[in-house]
Structures are given as structure tokens and as C-alpha cells.
Image (cartoon, rainbow, N blue to C red; front, side, top):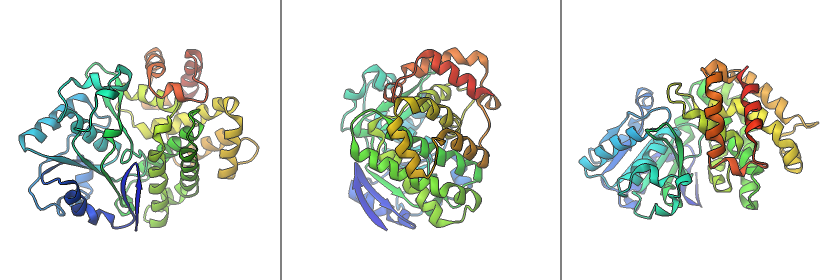
Length: 374
């Protein structure tokens, strides 16, 4: 086991979920609201948390695939009704992001939209945010150490809520919780994490420590994702994926790029309920191809670290997608021509758009979307 302090306190290693009670005490949380989902409960993972909390704590499980304003406010009502003083989020990015939204809205008075980054709300988020302990059950989002929450508002916009105060006060990263993850989710979440590492590394903001962490994280994921996909019981591979995912989350503050600008916009198509990691995996090859001209030296360093020759990152990513049984294109997920203009508009307004190595034009986004429709 390792105790890491970088942005927040992190318990990392097999069996670390057993440290939950210690951190509840450290943070002074006596009655947490547990945020998870029905799939986690059905998989038997919820008990790993509830049996370690002495108090009879409320549990909120109605978490959508893409967290919504309505679900956030419903959970806030539960939080207030039970006089909770903190949150424990167990699951993938959706329960963790929803928990961040609850931690914000249970302690702040304005409407949710006014705290969104693109609405200038970052400075309005204060240290009053309720404490969150995040326990990921996938190796993908890095949300357990991220300062952002993505929530779809009632008006259909999927917006980022960003503040250092939204970083969970503790992340408990236990790879044993991922051993039963299905192959489909193993692949999608791992490639989500890979996209975080690659986009962070390519972001033009100056942050060498973040770049070093991102490149190391990408290498760990690259070297272990196929093994974890083919043998979900391989704890060593699962551990490396979880560390790579964590490293992607630790570097978020450097900014992401066009992959996330598009996946956030596509995630706003609520009628489709699209999985964020799957979207990122589909978009990875095309965006990396476009970014080669904008950041040739960094692309070369990525390829050297991953053992790819002859500038073949985009082609190798496409091959990896096929090997991991990622859907071929957006059209297979229900995205149609009627969605293209909306997605372009939302992508160009997204906070990740500006930190692509070279921000894409509307026409570049259009070409990229149509290319991935197939």
C-alpha cells in the first residue's frame, strides 16, 4: 500500500477500502450520504462501504449514466432530510460527479447553472463545499482526484463545474473493486483514462510535472489494457490501470482538448444516454491524427514512450479500439446527421476546446464528427 498526497490524500492499493472508517473520522464525517448506483449494488460492491460505517446512513442510487441537475437536486433533498455532513461516492465517474454536485448545492445558495465554469461560476464555489470521499470502482475517469464535475442541466447543456474545492478530500483507490468489471466497461473506462493522459500531455499550458505524470500514466494503461480486458482477474494489470487512471485525474488541471470538447457535447444528447468513455475511445484516433501537425514533437515523445514507430499513433489507436471491441462509430450509438450542428456548437463552447494543441475550427469539428459517424 502507498499513501500519496498530491492535490488530495490518496489511499492506493489492494484492500485500501478498509481505510474508509479512518478517513471518515479524520474528516469529521459522522453521517455521510452514500452516492452509488443500482449496478454497483447489484454487483455486491455497495456492502464494501456500508459495512464499514457504524451509523445507519442514507444511500442514493438513482444516478443517471450522465449525471443530471434533477438527480443532483433529488440527492440534495436526501442529504438535507437526513442531516448529513459529508458524502461517500462509490462507483465510476457518474456517482463521483453527482456527489460533487451534491456537496456544492447542499452548501451554496445559488442555482446550479450559475456555478458552471463557462458561466463564470468558478470563483463563487467556496470552501464551504461538503467533504467528499471518492472510491472508484472503474479505472477510467480520474474523477476521484479531479476538480471538475460534469452535470447535464435541465436546459440540455452538459457543463463543467470546476473548483479546487470540488476535489474530494480523500480518494480510496482499491483495484480489487475493479476485478469484476465487465470487458466492455474495462475497455471503455481504460481508454477514457488514456484519453485524459494524452490530451493533458498535449495541452499547451505550461505544467511539466503534469506532463510527466500524464506520460507515465499513458504508458501504464497502454501496457496493461489488453491483459485486463482478456483476463479481468489479473490484479497486477488492474492495479496498473487504476494507477494510470489516477494519474490522468491528477493532471486534469493542465486542460484537456477536442476529444473531451466533443464527448461533453455528445453527452448532452440526453435521449441517447451515451457512455463518456466509449465516446472518447471512438474519438481518440481522429483527434490524435489532427493534433500531429499542431504538436509534432510531443506526438513523437508519446509514440516513443508507447513503443509506436513511424508516426502511427492514430492507426494503432484504431487497431486497439477494434481489439477491445469498441463500437466502430458514432452512428452505431444513435448519433445522426441531425445532431451534428448542435454538437459543433456545444464543443466550441466547451471549456476543453481552448486547450487542444490548436483549437479546432467548426469545419474541423464537422469533418471529425462525420469521419467518426461511419
